Length: 228
Image (cartoon, rainbow, N blue to C red):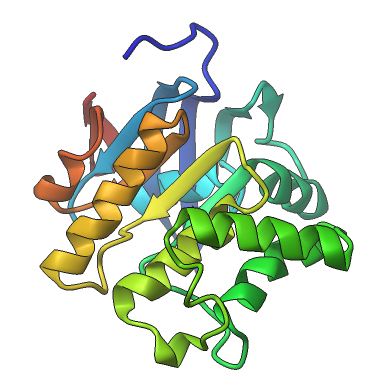
């Protein structure tokens, strides 16, 4: 698939150092990479490679010690927490290994929650949540609690929550980690379908089979890009 020239995500010589007392622990060491609109990119590496830190940079969950991070043309590297939160809400949809659904709320209410935080009124967010859940084939299960859904169904709700505000980028962090192989493949197939519809997806994984779902794989080790 051809992609527009202007990247939607750009990291330039990004370094991240965590300080534990007097000890400095480098998590990213001069990482530069780009993701273009409508790409499906897998970031792959072993535990401790820096892939989760890289995901946090792209997802506006953390800022670099040095270097630049651009999301949709905005330099987010120097933003404060309130600015980062606004950018996250507008531009990023998160899918985590742990579904992070609120147990006491229905699938529909869990998806609506993202729109509540962005100030949508009741009728509008109800329509938004219904539409995206139906697109996930969860129309008949939207009033069920998470405990009444299978693992695969819970992950579909989590993906619906990530999509409800129509973000620029979907970030998926080990999205099949809590699923058996069959349900995991269903989630990967769903991500591939969303990519085919034009979504930009960045997936972090340590699993080579999962990475094959992407059209491009970026390998990271010891905080450095090894292969892209």
